[in-house]
Image (cartoon, rainbow, N blue to C red; front, side):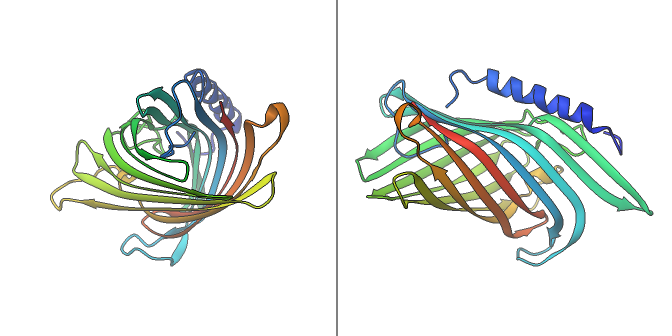
Length: 284
């Protein structure tokens, strides 16, 4: 898209994209959990995420040092979900769409590029192994669909399909809840492999509120002869987050709104930014 494009068309496309995402999931469902829900039950987490960055990490080494870079902003609608289908199996997904904007200085002029629409989507099948009240683990196989456009500037996806096998572990001890996920995202073409780890820790501080912390770490490896043309495949990042969730009672007890703050603390060749997430976890 050309520089200095009007915001109105961009906002309109974002609303259309949100409608498409919401209508594509019926019923909408939550982030993958090693506790496999019973058949017909599940969780859905629709959320809005706002990301902003003015700096970038070094393109040569992984670390926490940054330098001034182009400004990047993203407003994203994300829906993660899990649906129990019986036999220790569940369907899980991660659907995304949004509006991305990059602003840079060139020859004394401000150049702004904007894109909006669907981003890459992820769908998978999860199988529960040990499933007790206090401990659970599972294995999953996900497929990443390259639905995000790479012809727009900035690009909304990698343009390449990928598979992602994962192993998940969960622990519950009274008011404490923790999960750990590890796996690899393997791009079908190009030879790039992303090693990915995420951890979440939650604690029910009062009957109505839970505090939580999160960690996300990804490193990209690939064969030396592999030519990676899309920067979206190169993803090296360490991100930490803190959040607060509200647990209502009565008829709305299954609707749990949450607020999360995330910060990119280390990386390589990627923007170093902060993100605010507002959403609701719906259990049914």
